[in-house]
View 1 (cartoon, helix red, strand yellow):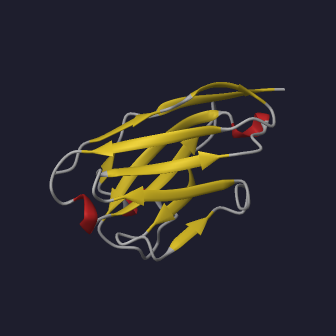
View 2: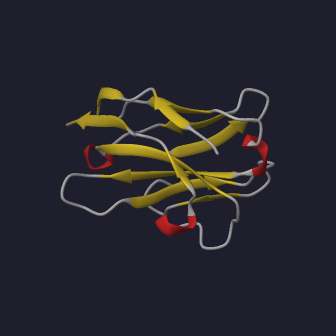
Length: 124
């Protein structure tokens, strides 16, 4: 069992930056690949980024590539999402999630555990 708690969301102007954190409970954090998803009002939850258990493989959605960076610290049981050059279309609730396998990493149903989400609002 893994419990995930996101933090770091807030209100920022376009062009600004935010760093999201996701703290995991349990001793098995390092066994899981960790992903970030987001859900804007009226839209489906979409994949943002994922990092493998050891950090050697990283994938991004095209919409955030070059602006967002995912990283993890297995000693701290935490995964991060550094978001730069934010745009109003990045406004959403951001969720972290854990998955045992890194196959269909863009699919929500591949993830076993989810956090409660943190709101990110980018003003124009």
